[in-house]
Length: 175
Image (cartoon, rainbow, N blue to C red; front, side, top):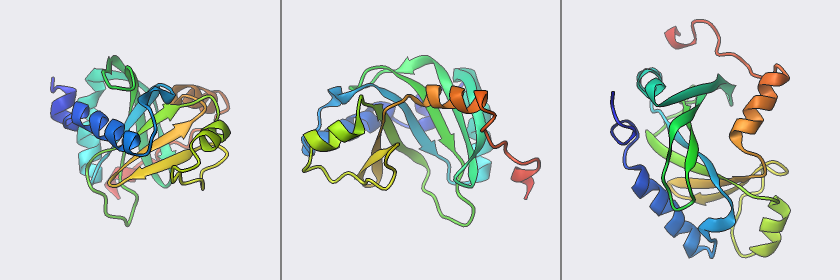
């Protein structure tokens, strides 16, 4: 079994880069817990390989189509240590059709009590607000930190309960 470090890269360096970039904007790591990080695969072949190898590190919460491509989320058996506290989930995103993606850790998501309060408390921070009312994004090229009021696991549970998950089409990876 490959370690998460071997599969994803240096998660500690990734978390430290996010924390440092947030600090440069005056944002503390104590805004809320980071509930997941996302790894973007550069190809469907890489997605399938990682999906297979990551299966031993957690329990699949869901795999479905989001934004025109498959994304799978695991609740990790052992949360990842980070300056934001333990990170319990991992998201793996396949590339969007027709787009070039760089492989690697791409974003972390932090759960906060209120997006409005975050905007009001930190008006100088250049948050991207196009995802409101559900999401704020802070671009830290090539990385991002996203902010939500609910955990990904809670969102997934609700989508499953409401039969709102769009399954990956049969034969998607053989196209």
